Length: 208
View (tube, helix red, strand yellow):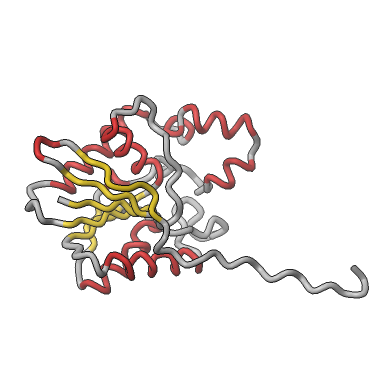
């Protein structure tokens, strides 16, 4: 069985209506469409998503393209699910070396969670996603950076939780193998994404 873990597109960190669970930004929507363009060609048979808005919205273009329902599984949610405000890794880095190091040391505790419980929840979600599906099933899972790290660390037998930095709308490909093992085919694929558009330089005026 093939599984592709898709990190959500870039969310609107400045959204005031849902600061704890923001929707996608315009470029995040474009990233979601790019994911759909690629995965629509790959024979996806099931779509699973975290219940969080940024993941669910990233799944929607593919679901619409294929006419498949989006199944939500709570365990694919991010560790910041109950935080008061979403903060991107870029924002966390900008808080300074001390705060960034505290996040890296224990990212689950940083958001007020329990690492063992979070890890168990993600692996339970992985098991529920695989379920009793046939060996030729191809599942797209729309999730977040820390759940992707949990699965990769589990599959590769790595001791720490965080080893990878999945980009927005990146794809990580897995194989569910006989006996319950998980093989890793690729990590952090991004060649399907549109190039980043840099803002145009500000025109100089006589007062500059």
